[in-house]
Image 1 (cartoon, helix red, strand yellow):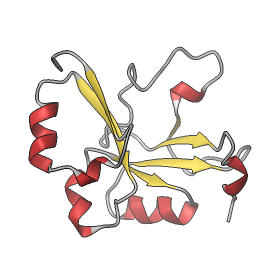
Image 2: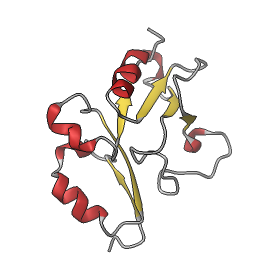
Image 3: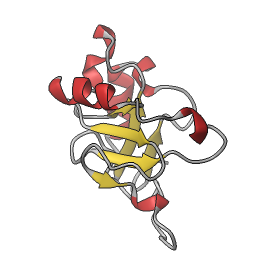
Image 4: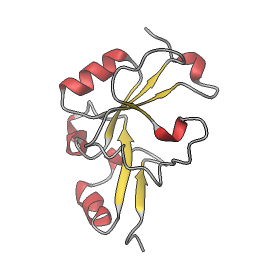
Length: 127
């Protein structure tokens, strides 16, 4: 059923909560995956390093995650400079990219960022 398909881990819930064995078994037949975890600081989630992006909501988060070897997925305030990495292709105007067609957030390639958007954007500040 998963052969040739990409998996978006964490679309519902945090993928760090699943068993590493289950992840490997499911991903074994997939064409690739994307995902991020909010649990990257937890000792029990370290198996996710190199597999999922560390979800970061501040420059301090980004620095901490990077210092510990994580690739990051950061939310930056609208109009602010990025901490590092590449703007999520799915958020670029007129882009056809989607998580299902992109594999940059595989935990191993690049740091990715998005500008804060939607109703929660007002809570993302430069501090």
